[in-house]
Length: 217
Image (cartoon, rainbow, N blue to C red):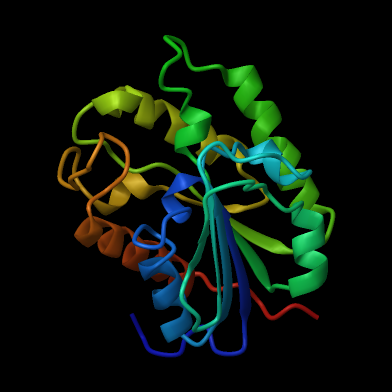
């Protein structure tokens, strides 16, 4: 990654549980984007679906937030999302980075709920697009075993294919291209061990650096 490729840009990163614990993606992804010169604000709400970011919605299992060079702050009780319109109005980011894939995957559902997923994704992309803000959408990576979330690689392929078709106008980032199935180890079939969150964060940052947003007017 070339140093300083994102100098002068403001990025807002929102997502699900992968961003909701300080040692998860909110650590290395935020760091990598900051090291490239961006001003970064990251928020993760555990269990949040895409449409939950259109209005204030309760989180299932906590929230983490991080601004600039500060450490991530974890909130376990009373966690909610903040409507994306309000976040964009306040931060005025040049781009929004959405890290939401596993909650869309509905891994406990024998069938992928395509209509529901479409409603979820388009609710958020339309809300972002209405502000004129550029965006990236990061899909789910591979599992290394089903674990307690029943995440399977077959469903991951289905979700990535769906998001690649439906995340527009956001630029889609397919996380399955960053590793081989089972290569990145998890603690529960879904959440990676620390070293692999670092690899994922670096790969996402690389994808953004290689296709950076334009400075908002």
